[in-house]
Length: 294
Image (cartoon, rainbow, N blue to C red; front, side, top):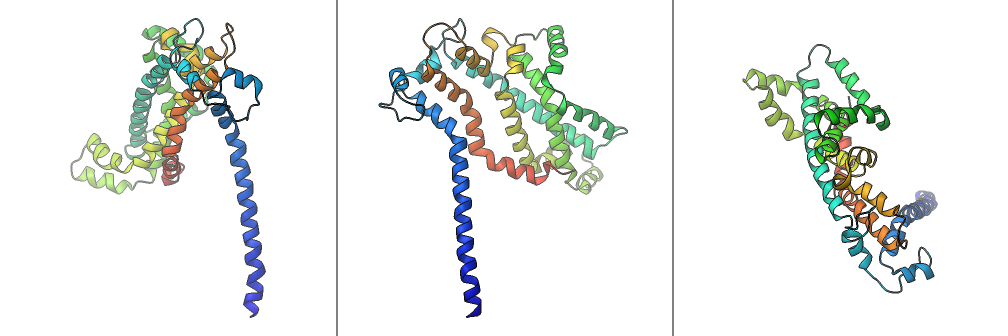
């Protein structure tokens, strides 16, 4: 009897507290999703509907013409071919840059933990500076390097830039993950006659799925959303979609078509949104599996 009288008020208080927390979370979710809702609603309105309504008013009729125009005929600067070509440019940049930087990061992490050499800790410490160097600092040296290599204003040049800049992060992730892998596995494989790459391919990589997912999501997001490197090191048909979106929004000729601009912005953001929606939980699991240790 005594226990029930004590537990009753506590249970009610706990329920009330839970409802309060859920209410705050629901408010925050709505608050953070509001820009996306406004963009979606604006993208399916006609211009007459936009002029007579408010930002969050429901469309009088759903019109998808703006999406087609943003994709294939909107003007980005002097070219009126939509953002489709620039969308595929971003894909051409992201895929090789993510794969190469992830592979090199795995290889570096493997060497820095299982094949340590004299000065490897110092080397790793110096490599970490790459994580904290502002983009603006490397603009001129990188431009000079791309010019020497004949890669200025090319897609391959942008791939090289992102591989170089991203390798510090991927090395950090893999190095910290491999620290948690028992070195006895590598020692036993060496005794059995396994070589450098055999150990890497058959022992380290099979257990690296969580950290590979982390690196792929991290690099994909960083490279796809990059604007500075894209606007500095690319020109014309080689520019990524972020630069094309900026050109579309800042085009000063003609009528300002907010529905087309919102459609183009959603198209530009769609790949990263999909990556986080489909693989966001694996990103968290990968981080907690060892990438922040060491």
